[in-house]
Length: 244
Image 1: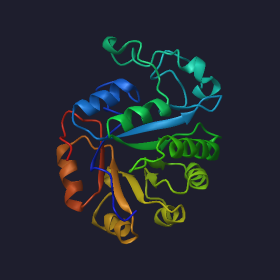
Image 2 (image 1 turned 60 degrees about the vertical axis):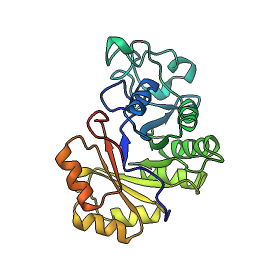
Image 3 (image 1 turned 180 degrees about the vertical axis):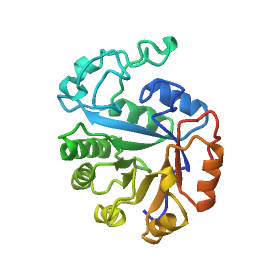
């Protein structure tokens, strides 16, 4: 991907901690603050509907219990995904990727889809998410960026929809991380922001890939990353940082 089509600033899970993460309320709030690109977490229900949720379990961000992947989308769609955040968001439902795609496309917003597989479903989740994303964004000028910490999920995404751009997420720089990203034909490496320095940025750029950092909520850190020439910054603080 020679011409990078994505803006520098990306709203984490919609609007970070200002709204219930991965819900339509969060993306709407991020857009209200001027953001044109968002990150979200995608996984599979028991009947393989692609929906948005960060955790493998339901307790933290919904009124449900247990493994999310054990429930059908019909059951998941009835859960309250907003009350945990604030009374004003009570009743906010979980969101399908299809619904978010429609919302983003209608508003000319872009998306970074983090493939967040339930353990044991890595490759299948990558395949299903990528295949659905390819269909949902068919004919659009800018496709979604698919990222994951899971090499198997990215391999599945590459197999199912090789034309969609991919990025390898990293919490640490393990041995062979750059070669791994290259082997997956990634267009970007997305690191925990303290991992970026002059040397790591240069290595990724020299390899023809872009550098993204997460989750950046401090102004001094953001300035340091921009001075390094980083290509994308994922933030919770859509209220603090004005997007380009």
